Length: 132
Image 1 (cartoon, rainbow, N blue to C red):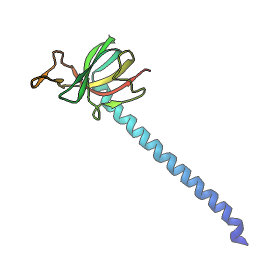
Image 2: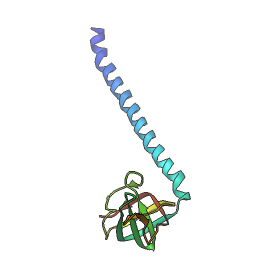
Image 3: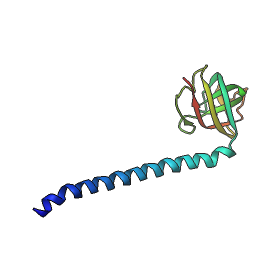
């Protein structure tokens, strides 16, 4: 009889502890990602503006993205390496893009052999987000 009255209380306490534990876990992982981004963010050059041109680098498996004002740049987008945030419209002319890049990167085009494209990027996109 005594255990029957305690069972709902024990179940309620177990559920509350589980919810609090999982909430703390998710908060910790979210804060860790945000802290990592903040550590890198201030030290990486940024860009932001309208996407004016997208050229495929056929030999290097990447894309040369020309970004217009207010913070123009010619940057290299490498699928699987560059972190892409919403709205994922980086390969289309017209949307606004804002992000950071790491200096370095080469756009190679196929011809008789793989040769550097006439325009070269200032860097490889580290992370970028776009408008619709």
